[in-house]
Length: 427
Image (cartoon, rainbow, N blue to C red; front, side, top):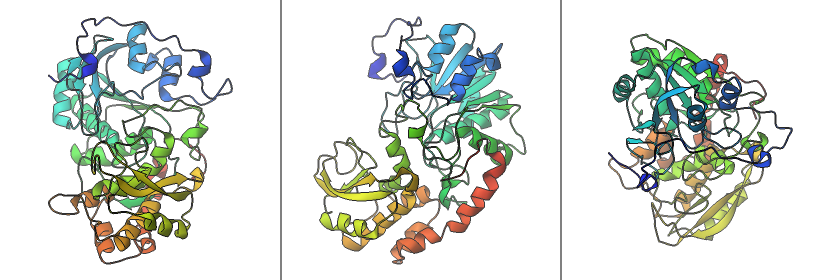
């Protein structure tokens, strides 16, 4: 049983007192804050949707209430919710693990609740965990960032599959999508499913996790369950959020959903800049600005110069030099750019990243895919097919590559419409 340093020597399992957070901290948007997350709505309703049930919670450090206390801690302390299990995704329930890591199975020292490792868990494993812990209702409360390859939505998908098979209720405590409500990018194609994309959705899907749960239940779960759906799906909606709102507009406290997602600006850029994970360039992991600092040892001032000349809406490119402490090019000086957001409402991260990759390939013979077999497989999985890679290698322009998926984006926008819960124009 793996246990992280955070838990070492923790012999007390009784619930610790909750934080007494001043109102000014609890409500960063001030007294006029009107938005309420699904977790807050449920708490204000005295947890009635979970009454009389054995509850299992899938969450991570983002599952907080306005006073910054974690929803599991508050449920447990209330005495009104019977939390029998917690399921930790990538990075873990308390967030102690780096990318690609988890906390393993352990007893949470704060609450005494058993925490099970759900990172990479398929429905079969989760069925066993639900059965073992006696879960009757599964609650999902994690802040997503709106990209197909951010793994929490696929943890939710597998958890929903397991709930279908065990007859468990499924409750989503919804949170805003920090990229807003617009869909962008290519569609995942059959043959390119993986842990970073298990079903056919757009790269920047423009949906909340509650909305995704609705389309998963209606269209995708039946494919994997011989036509079955959840016994009951309940989405506790965000109150006061509209689809044109970015995270900065919400008045909510930003909690890092993962170690390399430090700010809402990171989330705005991530659906595009994550593509650099498939190259031999650093995507800024091991710096204070992951997915904003992009570069490699072979890059010089010319990349920033070429990108600035393109006048890509919403972003600017500052020549930058940095030394990552982990991941690719660790402890090696890299030249590159810092992607600066000039207008959050105009940022199209996937378009920007496409221009960046096209220009890097033109300028630098050293640019290539990361080491793997077959070469370029990771860019195929991230973009959802081999089209991006083959068009790039055929010297297509960034404009041609972006235009190639427009019909797919339009079709997704129309298809998802009946599952949307929130109004407002798409930015």
